[in-house]
Length: 423
Image (tube, rainbow, N blue to C red):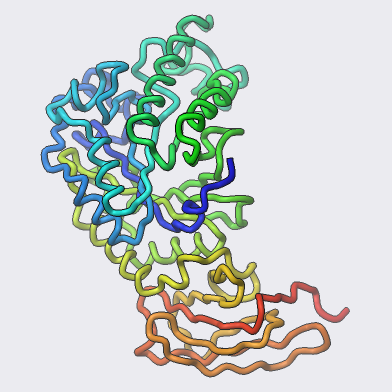
């Protein structure tokens, strides 16, 4: 299927890690895998998962204020705990916790009321299912996958029948998500613990797309994914094809009370601008407390990022990746018609902003948000090598404290010189 155009123009999504791990504030399912928390203690968190203040409508309104166009919720993480009323297994919010509610149904409805696309996270792996640790990866990517008791059979002997039962369970749960909630995006994870053939990803993708042809699938579907998903660091080279950077607001995916290392709004603006400047989306992760509320620090970060996006919307939406490295000291985007460059300046320019290698004539330069026109001139240039465009620094009143954006309107579509100069 061709990539859905809404995804590449969304620019920002919100990634919500919500599960029983938020009760004690432990590192998601990984605390179970690592042995940091014994299974009995980990599962006691079921009794404390109330979702007592969970308000999906408030979530959706917050995400819209943040400037997001979609969100992704952990419908089931690696621990096997499901947030919806699944008919396959008892380990879910409706039947196993005081919450007693289908949290995914409320989430999907609330997002659509706000015009946001619905994304659901589902882990291929399930460290609680009795049939999961029944086969071994034919080429384990690391020793842990080859030997961990939650992943592989203790005796090292494969049990194909047990694995078939697990896949039937997996297919049934994914089928529920697709038929009940018709997600715009399915964000899979855990793919490293089995091969593509063992997972049966071709058949799984066909079932998903037969039921809901517009579903976007992430790269954790391996050969059947639509876009790449780097994590926690902006790539130095633009990935080929659509992509999305997964980034936490602090250092944790889910709620961990001791983690107060929240990135500043200015830092988040920088991550966002660098990501969209290379044609990607930012999927920004926040972790609600067990009652379903977000820390004030995370709300403040989302709203601050949303304020910047709203002010600079023309440089964000209906744009594509901007200039290659070397033309401007900072990220940039380009209007869809190729006739306006948007230059992002993280620090207040002191005298001028330079733009190198531009062959086009410039019609006008202005400050996005205020509309103030800036003077500009060209120095140098020889033969086919264009001179440097110098743009007057904006006045202090036009400088944005998080990042200033300049709109460079061109005569014709962007035309860049990429040569090595006269030899």
